[in-house]
Image 1 (cartoon, rainbow, N blue to C red):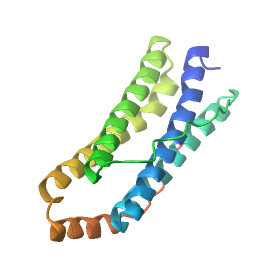
Image 2: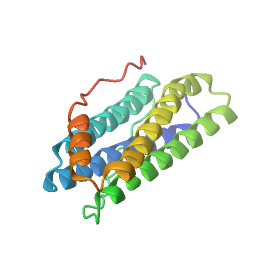
Image 3: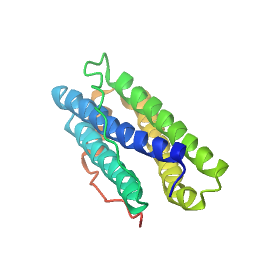
Length: 170
């Protein structure tokens, strides 16, 4: 059995991952409304990844005979002032999720819960990639966003992103 605090944090993370999916769907909707289908696609893929992350946490709890507690998912912000503000919000959110993962890791470490720490190792690495991707989008928008041709090229680049299921084995 897992430590009570670790279990609670893992359950909370399911909700946070589902919120992330909702948030990225809101971002995707915004970009669709703006006529930037590539950006919309990029965030659709992000949303799908976040849903899968929630399911990984859920399955981990189930595989460890822990009760899964699902809570209501908060409604995300759905109006945005600019393309850059959306991208910056995405970066801030990924940094927040990284902090959440680190909090769970710290709790598992304190209890010498090596199994949970090993499970979380994949998420630690994943969050590094997520932050880097979000940072790169912000940098590219700052470089190209004011030029319509460059924005079109960036949108086309983001349209090519496809979903790849996580390779984490539970």
